[in-house]
Length: 416
Ligand code: COA
Image (cartoon, rainbow, N blue to C red; front, side, top):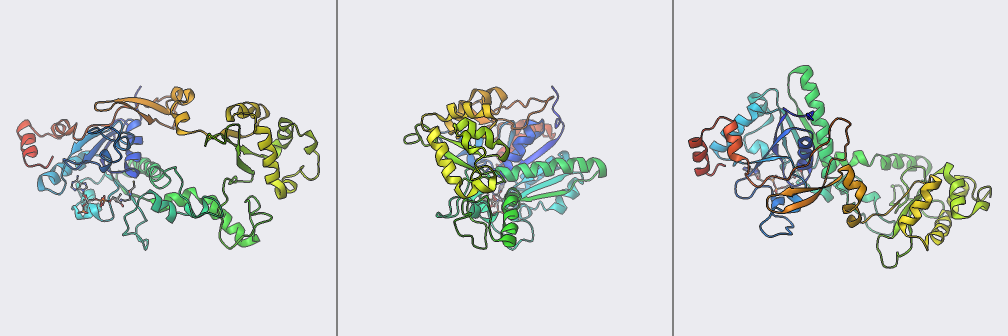
């Protein structure tokens, strides 16, 4: 099966998570992704949170599959020369260094496009260019706080809370991948590359747009009827933290199931979709609620929504989360078990679909990773192991036209 991005060469000058998540995605779809890493150390995540001594950490292996690794010290004259050759032959350079690092290395946008006018230069930064914080270095949780996610996540009586989902890192990488693919199509039209920039703050804000919706609604009417604070609690002039409330027009909550006293994940998420009210009442054995004016409409239900959830929890008390969902799905009720990472790792459906995959690795034996969440009818991305540090250095140098002696001399100079 041919892969749509075959023939696209990408210089992967990324590290940690945001950049590597982007280039990994492009590698799955066929791009030749050359990860450029500092000789001796490489991407810092190779050593972070190691579970096996002397083997690349999962943090690295799970974000760098399907790539080749080239060690190169791009601050030495010899290393710069190799990078320049690579730039001339590549379609895209992706980087997520601290602000100004690429310029300090001598590879400004002007210089790169002079070397290769068709090159697309794609960057992740914490804040966008010209923002009053654009000099800051940024990691995941910093972005979640600056992007509105933390102030609107958690419970009203607790502090701002960050999500476990990598809204600042991997999410930004996905935005960048869309930008790169767009620029590649644009290049087909104009013949020229361009600069593509995505900030972590902007990417988080993009996912928080319903909270910006809520801010405007709050300013207009003074309350938000789908939040637990309505109708009994207090609203201020900013969007509050709404716990586990549904973010749209459908009330929902995380509800206890059998075993919750000992199992921290014995819960389901239950949504009261307006038109599903009748099946919900039937499923719960409460047919009298169907036409009761205190329950029949969403507006009538809202003042005692937590009493309704308490009644559902009574019904759930003798059912596991899986048993409950098996009953509720027959009534077309939007719900799901709260799954632990252990359950996700072992889920047969996720294994069968390729969302969770086990891949071989030279040091680790094998490791579990998340495969492509995007499914195609004519492409089945095959996930291969991440490269060892510098594993493909000589191979890539010889593709660039260096002979054996020149490669040996580059090694001797410690440029590779
Ligand atoms: N050869 C020579 N030098 C190299 C190199 C190579 N192959 N690869 C990196 N370097 C140098 C850089 O040029 C930089 O040097 P300088 O400070 O002298 O200019 C240095 O290594 C450190 O890079 P930097 O990006 O500053 O790393 P850091 O560990 O200090 O900061 C981040 C890490 C993630 C905070 C920072 O890179 C950042 O804010 N990136 C943008 C946002 C982002 O992507 N955040 C992380 C998301 S997971």
